[in-house]
Length: 387
Ligand code: AMP
Image 1 (cartoon, rainbow, N blue to C red):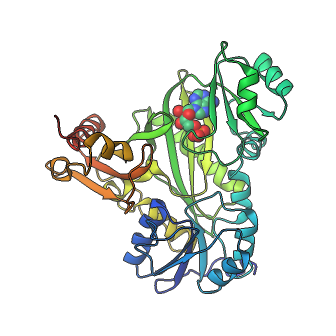
Image 2: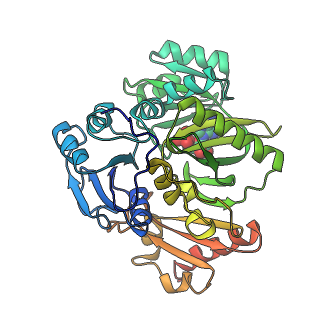
C-alpha cells in the first residue's frame, strides 16, 4: 500500500509495529506506551529487551515474508530499531501499512558504499573512500589515498565490527583475506579532534527538528561516553545541524536519522555514517531533554507535532557493557552507582552479560558538561567494588 495518508497523524490508541527487538526498541516501546500506543515487536528472538515491554512479541525470521505481512497487517504503522533487515522485509511490510523511515532510506543507510556515495553525490563532506573487491583494489586505494586508513566491510558493520585499521606496516594481503570475499570500503583515516552526532527528526509534512549536538568518546570502536552539549564552537554546531538537515531532506526521510560526524583539527566536519533510527548517543535525552529521542521518533513517524529538544541541563551518558559484570565478578553494585542522586540507571533486560554487549547505561546531569562526565564515570566506577 502506498503512503497515501501521509499527512493524517497516527494517533494515540493506534498500534505500532517495530522491526528489531533490542534496547532501542525497548526504549521506543516505553515511550510509545507512555503516550497510549500499543506496540508489537518483530524479531527472530524471544524474551527480548523490546518484547519484554511490548504488547506482542512476534518471533520469526526477517526472511519469513508471510510472517512479516501478517505482523504488519495487525498494526497501523511499521518502524525500525534495527536497520539491517533485508529490503524484502520492509517491502513486505509496506504492502500492508506505511513503513517509516521508508525502505529506500534503509536501502541507502544499510550499506556503507551506497551511503557514502549518496552523501558525496549530494555534496556532503565525507572522507575520501574506495570500493574494494580485489587485492589490486586495496593496493591501489592504499597508494592513492595513503595509510593509515580504515578498511570496513560494506554491509552489516556496526560498533567497529568488520573493521580493520591499516597502517603502512599492515599486510594488505592478510587484510584483504580478512574480508573473506565480502565487498569492502577503504576510507582515508580521519585525524579527528572530536566525534559528534546529530539526531534529527523529520515529519511527513517536512518539519525538521535536531537535538543539540552530542560529543562521543569511543573505546574499542564502541561508544563509551556521550556528553551534551558538545564542547564545540556554536558555529560548528550550527553547521553540523545544517548538514544533517540537508541529509534528511535529500533522503526525503520521515522519522529519526542519526548523523555521526568527525570534527577535524581545522574545524571541518566530515560525515562518518548514518543510522535510520534512534542512537546510543541519544540515550541521555531521556533524562536531560524535554522530549527524548524515542518520543521524537514516535512523533515523527506518527505525524504528530515534533517535541521540544531543549536540554534541561548538561548531561553525560556512560554505557554499561557486559564487561562491568565480568569485572564485578557478578551483579554490579547498583546502590553504589545510585548513591549520587543525579545519576539515573537504565537496564535493558538482557540476562547474559557478555564482553562488549550493551547491557544498560547511566546518565548524570550536572551544571557543566565536564561535571556531568566526571559524575557518570565515577558512578560507573562504583559499580565494581574495589577488592
Ligand atoms: P563506524 O562503525 O564507521 O561508526 O566506526 C566506529 C569508530 O571507528 C568510529 O566512531 C571512529 O572512532 C572509528 N573510525 C571509523 N572510521 C574512521 C575513519 N575513516 N578515520 C578514523 N577513525 C575512524
